[in-house]
Each structure stands twice: as structure tokens, then as C-alpha cells.
Length: 217
Image (tube, rainbow, N blue to C red; front, top):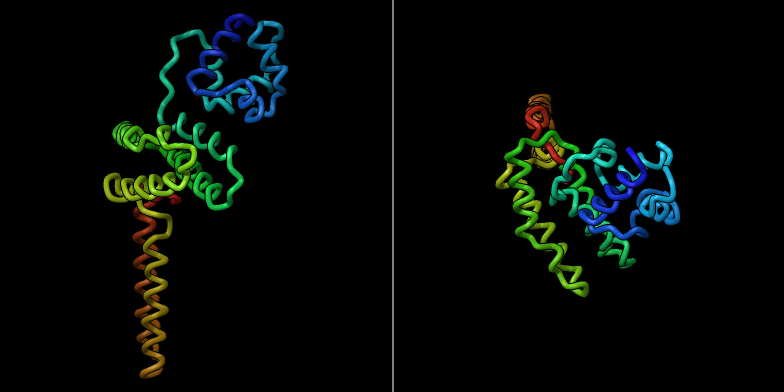
């Protein structure tokens, strides 16, 4: 690929991602001057530089180096980049926590082997949330949107938090056994019952994970 083709491709991808040269330089750990030289067709970057830029743009190398038509930025990828930019604008701990949680959740989804139907559902709901229309002075609204998104993933797409049933089983067993001990003392049967409950919950979590429905929320 020639420098002019790469320059054009990089500008297009940067535009689709809504990223400035400065932001791309920061995310890719490539100097701003190098980014500028590539886009001005003044430099042929090394393979390592191209890899870093592709990673920051969240595209495959062949998308950055290819000559075919570009796909529209997916809402999942675009939203991650958008939230990273919002995160960079604040140092308020509560807001930082919200943005980091939202970004982590979207990254976890992006790494899963999602079906086309799941991808469509997730991206449609992200559009519905209209995160880009939240006023800059209302970052607390992102928390409300994050909670809505989590609820959607659980109720509509049937994702389950990692170790969900195991944690419920352990909590129930501890409370149950403690109550028995206080009133009647503990017996072998009670201990076995508690262990059985925990084992069933662990097995349920294993089944959910095998089905691809477990997710770190």
C-alpha cells in the first residue's frame, strides 16, 4: 500500500471514529508528529507503528491497510471510543468509576463470540440510549444509562453475571447453616445439604458459561 493510500485510509478511519490526531496519538502511543507525517504523505510508518494505530482505531490490520470500502463505525466500537473521550475530560472519582465500568462492560461484550442477533440488539439499544446527546454537565446521567443497559442485557439478552448463582448459593448456605447452629447446633446432614446447594449453584454457573451467557458486569 502506498503512502497516499494509507494517508487517505487513516483519515477516513479517524473520521469514522470521531478521533482527532491528538487523541489518536495519545491512544496509540505514537507521536503526534508521526501521525501528521503519515496523513501528509511525508512518511512510511514501520510495521509496529501501523499495529499501534490499528489497535487504537480498533480495526484489523487489513482494514487499515486494505483498499476496499469502509464499513460504518459500529455502535459498540464507536461508543467505547466516545466514553474514553468522556473519561479523559473528568477527574471526579464518581464519574471516573462510571465511565470505567461502562467501558469495561462494552469491552467484555466486544470480546465475546456474539451472534449477529445479539450484536444487532446491543447496537440498537446503544442507539436508543443516545449517550452522545447527554449534556456535558450531566455526567450522572451516564450512571442511569449504564444501569438501563445492564438491565437490558440481563432481561432481554439473558446474560448472567459471572458466578451469579454460586454467590447466591454461598450466601444462602452461610445464612442457613448459621441459623441452624444458633438454634439447634450443626449436624453432618446440614453440612451436606449446604454443600449440595453450593454444588448445584456452581453447576448452574458452569452451564451458563458454556452457553456463552456469562458476563462480567
